[in-house]
Image (cartoon, rainbow, N blue to C red):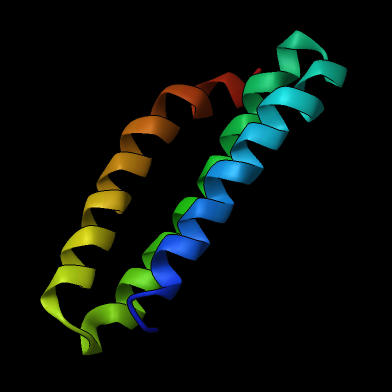
Length: 86
């Protein structure tokens, strides 16, 4: 993975998160909105962990940036994931 690809991937994440929040969550019952959002964030968190593991052969800056993103996803997903349990 090269350094210019990382902002593109995570820029696409923010665009897709906006799309889900703006368009998809409006058609979902309120009780299931947290489940949808939590599942999306959880899936992208797994992708970020995979990218972190793959980045160990690159420079330290990318490893630190992805490690920070993994920590941030953990802080964002944990509040939403309990909403998925009924």
